[in-house]
Length: 232
Image 1: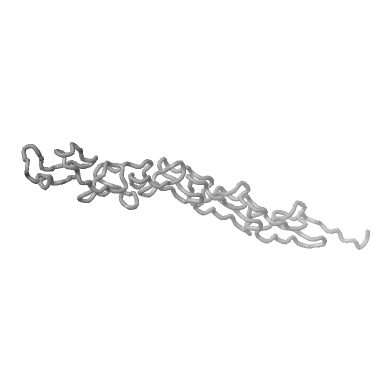
Image 2: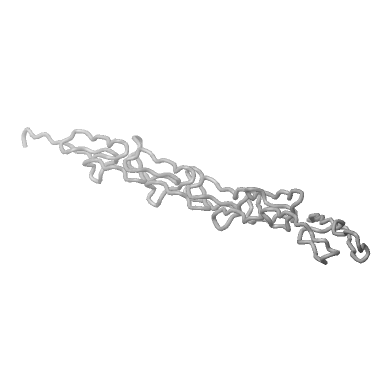
């Protein structure tokens, strides 16, 4: 037809779009990509991103995540890893850990543990022992060093200190049979020659021997010095 000017239309490509009648294609802003027919732009979903020099939304790399409309992906911090959809990060469970940018959590070495969301593992502090995935205090009369998995009885003649991190020698005049959290005061021993008694556990007698037949008429009761010595 005379006077009709034909127009050649070229499709928009990559991350560009156009409206009807447009003479040029426009770039989608970062964080968006062109829809299927390039008639508009759609936001990059969580787990993907698009920067200005990318032609479409790209999945986040290992150990990374993104929220919807992101221009780049971010590393999960230490103690966390990406969730299933890479839309965020989740804590590593107890007895596991991760460093920044990790794709998955790692198990703690034997004898060590961690709380959820930990960046590293550690042994139990002194005075505690590992029980499953938690640290529990040592029972009274026992102690432990840092990183221990079991508690140890204090030896005879000692007692545990205030926080069960070690043992202390019983002071003079007291004793313990071992595995004790406190020392027991020595008990005065009965005069063995008169009562045929014996000293209690943890002590011995060094009394002067008394013989009422031999010392008849002598106030031998004063000679029986009830003197008890502790033994370990």
